[in-house]
View (tube, rainbow, N blue to C red):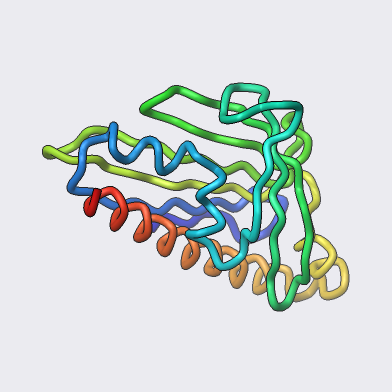
Length: 169
């Protein structure tokens, strides 16, 4: 796990990696099918492609519906900003020019299997977390730290699910 940034304005990011005993072509369909992601996440509840899209391509959009015990329920529109089949899949949340978050999966062949990484960056645009920071600005660093640890835990669980599915296939 790699974690950077302490304040929201620093665009904090976290990256989690795992090695999977399966070839990239078995891992790729698991990370590029956003419809499967709610099955691997406690927070993400449902996903729908928009504008008639049936899968990822640069510029395609999807809505994600999420739920968190402390933050409530919300929906966001994401825009695919990077898509290299078999290698990279990334999306920006809300405005791609000024996102509230960016998420990326990257896969690389390694040691007879696949190295899978998931990376996310908060900001620079405001997000739901911004409201908590507005209410308690003196606790900003703690609020950001706690949320980044949640992302790290959730991402680790997601990669664990992907690893299990790919290795059992």
